[in-house]
Amino acid sequence: MELETTLNQMGDAADLLVGAAEEPPRARDFVARLMFGAYNIALALASPIILGILLAKRRCRQGLTQRLGWLPTRLTEECLDGQTVWVHAVSMGEVNAVVPLVQELKARAPHLRLVVSTVTQTGKETVTRRLEGLARHIYFPLDFPFVVRKVLDTIRPQLVLIVETELWPNFLTAVAARGIPCALVNGRLSTDSFRGYLWLRPFFARIMRTFSLCLMQTDRDVERILALGADPGRVVRTGNLKFDQKSFEFSADAIHLGIQTHEELFVAGSTHPVEEEAVLDCYRRLLDIAPSLVLIVAPRHIERAAAVEAMARARGFAVFRRTALERQAVAPRGPRVVLLDTRGELAALYRQATLVFVGGSLVPIGGHSPLEPAISGKAMVFGPHMDHFAEVADLLVSQGAAIRIRDGAEMAVPFARLLKDRAQLQRMGRAAQQLVRANQGTVAKDADLLTPLLRRH
Image (cartoon, rainbow, N blue to C red; front, side):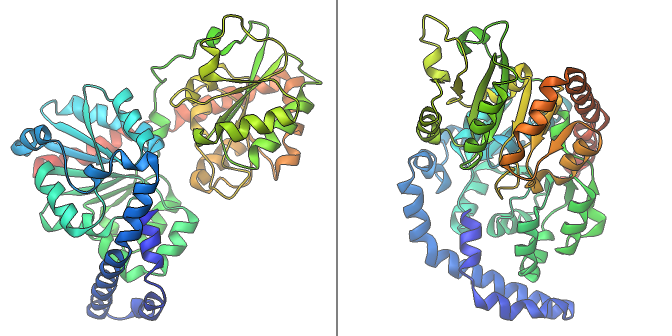
C-alpha cells in the first residue's frame, strides 16, 4: 500500500518518461535511473505522511520500531554466521502459502536459520503459530535506503525469497548490490497491478533484473512478468504453493461453536462490506429449505465485527460471537448467525461446512483463496471478481467444483439447488479435492530450483 501511494506521487513525470520504454537499452537505463531518483524523492517527501499513517493505525504501531530498522540485539548476534535465509510474506495468506516451502527448505538444510518477515500483525501471528521452532519473525523494513541497509547489515541473508509480488525498489536493489541471490516465489501479478506497473516499465524492468529466479503461479503470470522486463532465462512456471498446503493444525471445537449434531454450516469466508448483506439475505431464503442451517460469517477484517453484528441483528437474526460462545454454558439453538471474530480458524471451519461462499468476489477486491475449501473437499460459490485467483477459479468452475455468480441477488439460487441435490453437492466437493491433488508438487519444484542458489552463494 505504501509503495502504491509513493508511486502515484510520481505523477505526470512518469507519463513523460514512459515513452522512452521503446528506446535503445542505454536510453532505457537512463530513464530507469531518472525514475528511481524520482521514486526516492517522492518517498522522502511522503515520509511524514507514511509515518503519520503508521502511527495513527493501532495495528501498525506494534512493529514500527522494527520497520525503522531496530531489530532485536539477539537476532543481530545470531545472524553473524551468514547462514540465514530471509523469506518475506506480506500477511497471513502469503505466510500460509509459503509454510510448506519453508518446512521443505529447513528439512533439506537443517543448518539454515530462517527469518520470515511480514507487514501485518496477522502475518506475525501466523508465523508464530505455524512456524514455531522453525523460523523467527521480524517486521519488513520501510523502503528507505538507510533503513534497508541497516536491516541487511543485521540479517546478512545468503538468500532472500519474496512471496507473490512485493517489489520494493530500494530493498531489492540493495540485496542485488550485495550479491545476495533473490527469488520471487509463488509469483503472481493481478490485472490492476500489472496495468499500473506497465506505465512505469523502465523502472520495473530495472527491478526485475535483481531477481535470480522468478517462480510463477500461472502462464498468465509468466507472460506478465516477462512483459515487465524479467529475464526469460530466470522465469519458470512452477505452480501455486497453496495447492500443497496441508490440513491446518487448528481444529475447531463444534461445542464451542454451539453446533448441534443435526445442524449444518453455511460458511461465508473473508467477507467485505456489501457481501455480508447478500449473505444474510441468502441465508434467510435458504432457511425455508434447510431450517437447521447455521450461518458462520468470517469478515476479512475482524475489526468490522461490530458492524456485521449490527447488520445481522437489524435483520432479526440471533447473533453470537465466536469468542463469546466459549464462555456460554448452554449452546444456542435455532437459526442464528455466528460471527467469527478470531484469526486462524477459518480453514478449520471450511472442513465442517456444508455450503461455502468465498468472499472478496462480489466486490472488486480480486477474491480470496478458494483453495482452502477445495483442499477440504467442499463445493463453493464465488462472485465475478476472482482476479487474484483467476486460473484457479476458472479450473474449479470448468471441473464442476465451483459455481460463479454475477451478483449477490443470485447467491441463493445455486445454494438452494445444492441443498436439494446432495449427490451433486458431494460430486462438486470430490471434484474440488481431485483438482487440488492434480496440481500439487510445487513445493518440491521450487525447492529443487532454490537449492542451487544456496550452494552457489
